[in-house]
Length: 134
Image (cartoon, rainbow, N blue to C red; front, side, top):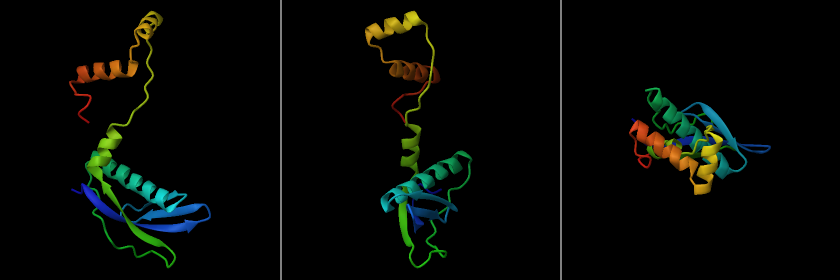
């Protein structure tokens, strides 16, 4: 199973930046600059890779063949560490809306309670997880 890879990409200049084709995943993305286009390609590869893992499918091995590149295209590689990408994605903040009684909100505000921390700690306690483990 692929945990790290350097995947070939093909950058094609467009009127407003660059279109990126990622042959190993048969998808595309775009960016306003070369750096942004490469970053977007890395994100697409990372997201597709962890989606494939979640579906118990294999992540494609990097393939250096880019036969459909044209003369003015830029052919380069982007590296992806799927383990690090999963950790980054799994630890991103997700906004949740919850409702509590007014009196509880007023008292919590007086005490300077951090609602997010309390909710994270409570959920971690219920599911038996260490909030810092991911």
